[in-house]
Length: 136
Image 1 (spheres, helix red, strand yellow):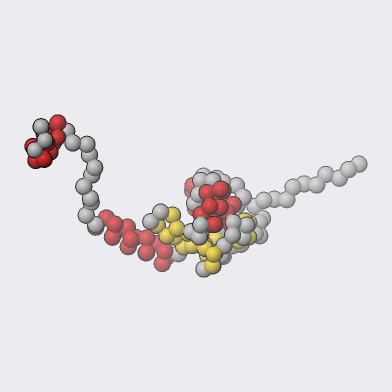
Image 2 (cartoon, rainbow, N blue to C red):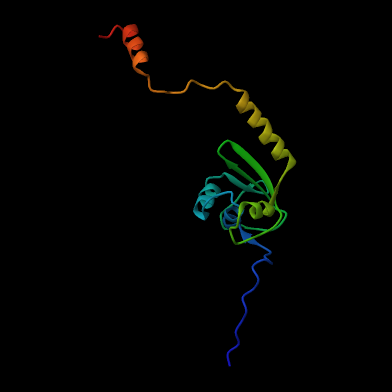
């Protein structure tokens, strides 16, 4: 008789690929987007540029930039599966310095004056523009 091996439990991971962890922690929608961000230099592991295949473990500091926000998180758990947002937030903790920096930048953006919105002129506005430019 042939022995059947039971698959190893995936919850007891010691190491996991960086791109897979970023996807499971819901920082990026797909693994390919996570890979592009890593290759583009937007993700760093322990202060150095990393490759998508870099294996990370619990306790590693990951610094990532998304749009205008820059975050610094510490890996607290590993998971190969992408789950809901509340469970994904348990995979990392954001550093206090990172939270403070994000709040400061957010306040600065809010305090800046808003630029004029580009709206299409209505009939009255067009008439005023034509009158100003003296176009008939």
